[in-house]
Amino acid sequence: MVDGIDLDREDFIDAYDNGEYEYFEFDKRIFEENDSDNDPYEMDVTFTLVADPDFEGDVVLTLSGDAMEEQEVTIAKFVKPYTVSAQQNDLTIDYRNTEIPTDVVITEAEAGLWEKGTEFALTLDKIDFDDDASVTADDKSGMEIKDVKTKDGEIRFTVDSESDDEPATLTVSDLTLYMDRNLPAGAYDLNMYALDMLGVDSAEKAEDFDGSDYKAADKGYLTQTLLADEDTTVFVGDESDDIDYTAKTGFVYIVTAGSDTTGFTTKLTVPIGENYLIAGETKVELDAPAYINAEGYTMLPVRAISTSLGIDNNNVLWDQATKTVTILYGDRIISMTAGASVMYVNGSSIPTSSSVEIVNDRTFLPMRDLATALGVTDLTWDTDPTTGKTTTVYMNANR
Image (cartoon, rainbow, N blue to C red; front, side):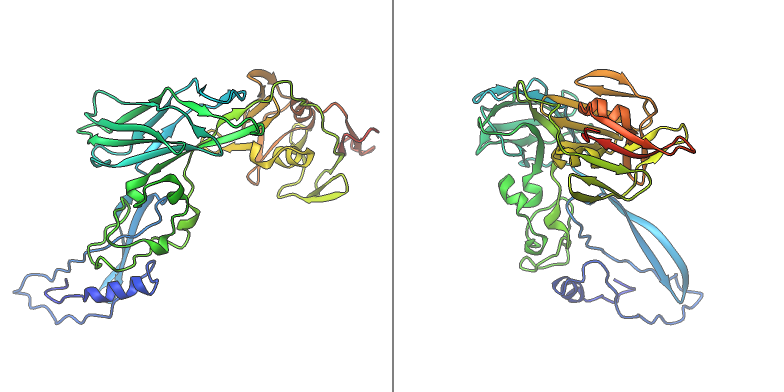
C-alpha cells in the first residue's frame, strides 16, 4: 500500500506464475509534491518471501529511487528449523536388531518454532531402522513428543506440545538397525526430514520434492503465501530438487572383519607441480598439484591419491566445521585435521612430518605420512640432483 494506492496483488501472483520469484519490479509511482503543512508520505509494503527449504541467512532489501539514496535493510533472517549432533558408529553386520551405541541429539533453532503436530523422520542410506526408538525432550523447554514409531525403515515422531521459553533439545536413543548381509563396507549417512514443513508425509517423498510443485496452500516454514490464492503455484527455487537432508555424514560405518587394508596394486605416478597424476594407464586431472612446502616436505593431495588407489570417493569425508578429512577403507579409519601435526588411524595418534595443509580447498599431507596411513609400503621418488627436491613420487611401482 503506497499512501492509499494499492499495488495490485495480481501483479505479484502473475510474477510467481511466470517464474519471476527472484526479482520483482513494480511500475513507477508518481508522488505529488508534499505540502509542508502535511505529514510526510509513508509507504507500507508487505512482502511474500519464497526461498529454497535449505536456504539460511539474512534477507537484505535494497531501496533506491530518484527521491532517495540507495539503502540496504535486513528485513528477515531464514534459519534451519533444527541442528543435529551425532557421532560416527563403527559396526559389523549383525542382521536384525543391530544396536547403535550412541544417541542422536536434535536441537530446535528457536523456541516455539516447531508447531504442535509437526512430524519428523530419520533415515539411514540403504539401511532400515528396526524396532521403535526412544525420543525424549529436555525438561526446560516444555516440549512433549508423541507417536514415536518405526515405519518403512524410518523413525517417525510428532510434536505434541510446543516449546515455551527455551528451544527444545531432543535425544533419540535405543536405535537399532535391520542390516542386509550384502551391505558393502563403508559409510552410511543419517538423514533428517521435517515432513510437515515440506508438505510431505514420508522421507521418500521429501527426496522427490520439487519446488515447481509447491502450492500456496501447502505449509512450509520458509514460505508465507499471504498474497497468493490457494491454487496458485509458488516457486520455491530452481535448485530445490537438490536439497541435502544429510544430518550426519558417515553416521554408521560398516566394518568388514579381517578386511585387507594393504592390498593396493594400482601404480601411481605423481609429478610435483603438475595438475595431473597417472593411475595405472589413466591420467587423472588435479584441482591442485602436489608441491614442496616451506619446510621442504613433499605434499600430496589426500583425496586424489586415495581415490586413485581405489578407495570409493564417498568414503573420503570432509567436515567443513572442523576442517577434518576422514578416510574409510576396510577396517581402517584415518582422520586428519588442517593445521594439526598428527593424524589418527583407528583412533591411535601418529605424528606427521609436517602439519596438514589446505591449498585451493584441497587437503595435503606429507607423502610418507599419507603412505603410512593408507598402508602403502612401496613408496619411491625421484629427486633433482641439483636442488635435492622431489620431482616425481611413485606408489606401487616396484622400482
